[in-house]
Length: 539
Image 1 (tube, rainbow, N blue to C red):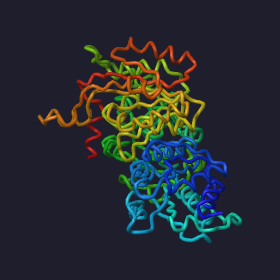
Image 2 (spheres, rainbow, N blue to C red; image 1 turned 30 degrees about the horizontal axis):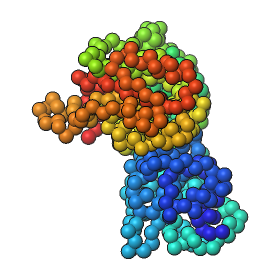
Image 3 (cartoon, rainbow, N blue to C red; image 1 turned 60 degrees about the vertical axis):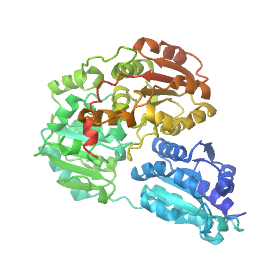
Image 4 (spheres, one colour; image 1 turned 180 degrees about the horizontal axis):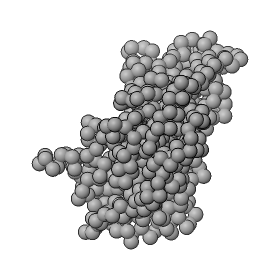
């Protein structure tokens, strides 16, 4: 076998079961070797889409995924998606051919590109180490929760190599729980009168342990945006903390005297630049990574360890009412959901209010869904008005805040969760950026609902700069017929200018769903979404 074949097989034997990519001459052999070894290959129409699909797939399955790209331009095309994954600490292996001649048109410093965006560069330098390096790339991605760029030099790929026995993978790091920190957390919970738990992505799979501890100490439950759905259905759940929080959720979190972040960074988005935490509140952070403790904001103390293990280790917390009073429970039941907050409907004149649109869709679409959201002024509406069944029902690739990733995110999530209806929520700008992957949705036969919130503009910039009298010609566009574009790719499509226009959605849901459905929603753009001012504080 050649080095490329050995690497492809070793990646699969090390735990990669699905690869996404765009195949060129440089990654043709290694990709086929992965397929021959049993991996599923998903062809994207753009490397940026492939990287985001892989990111979403890994997030929703909890397993590492691979991206395979051509040398040079294949890698640079994928960099935005790779950066998003790296910032999110997604276990991902990017398999990239590498031009070794400086005279090649494809020659770039790929290792430097990886390091620049927070990925770990590795290289297969010889035939003798091919299988071992591939296995090490997967092990590093999984163990350290990192994106690894595995460079395959063109002048090495074709060398003869032996598969040999599987190289021993690096041993997993022993999980050590900070026992003194656990005891300190127990004492803090014992004295708190209004505790709030905020769970992040690191708390996935820990619902039962966190709910049990929260019940004993009387804590309310909230999540960061990426963990939305973790406490779905719990009567003490505040849903998402931060810029997306409903007025009641923000009020109750601000009233906490103890805030515990579980696998959550407590960053500016989740804590509204710190304004969501009372000045005298005690802030505690629990994380597997010691370097994450206090990295985003000052904390009273941190506890190192896996979320579930730490929560289960807090056994000294005596039962108490805490924040769980009858009045608080009644308020949560009545007012914590955004759809229960009164609003003036801005629809009319051929435009639909995005809140009314999303509430109607929430009622129409089946509860078993996986929602992916692109970035933009619109994003708060699908994020907060569409309910999800659990933390694996919401895929939020927003660590890099790039528009154009939403559709690819939905594809990766759909492949990870074929048991659920995939819903992609996009703005018009992001939809046009990622439109090439509409073909991928059709080709893969995904029964997806794509909702385009079309305000014919980059709405965030319109609402941010418009009030200051800035000219807006650079961020406004003619209306686009997204329904016609979608039909050209093979979608069914409907244009919605009022809630009544959504009746074909019910027909599609009741039918065989042979083709995916795109909803071209012409949304009212008179006002900015409520979270926009908060978002621009971070710029």
